[in-house]
Length: 283
Image (cartoon, rainbow, N blue to C red):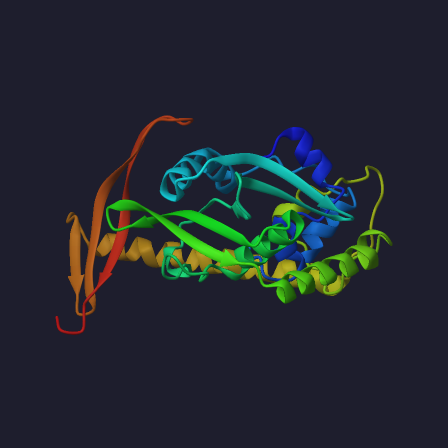
């Protein structure tokens, strides 16, 4: 788990999680996101539901890994080399290996335990960390959802020197080309999550291409019309139920049961939700 000081320091380097985004292998972050962060053009990321969950679960997963591997772990270690850095979850004491703890809701993205069949973004992260720590093996414990339980799995990734050096070379070239020169990377497409954190300058106006504004207004209008049409279609379906809580047609069944929203930050309320269940082929 990174401290506030580590987060601030990491802005000066390409970290393990940045590596996958720069190489276009992160489903949640783009190279433009990393560039905006490293050049100081956005406010610091304060975390979200996913990162909060990961921070809470990391100690639990590392405790399990320590027991599963029968080793002693040295946690939260940072390594640097030029513009590259790695905040490693743990080193295995007196061994040439590291531990990178993960949690995921996508169990189908992970292969058989004991193998290196892990999502590509994590494979890149692990090789980035292995190179900087000069270790040969990464243990990757992960907590995944399973049928009526949670599933701990352990994966092993042996360092591929060619891959590690290829990743490092591309990251260093990217840093020199875009961050040092303060030039936006090619195919500049920041995510909306990062765009919300861009530091804005008051009292100035930026020229925006007409076609972008036109497209936005048109799609907004289309979305509004589609929502209005969906709302009207739903109204007609609910009206056709008369006073029943369920209905049927040749294609499946409908339910319109009461749902209760528990009181947390808002007052508790009860409402009805329309749900559709299609018929199976043999019904």
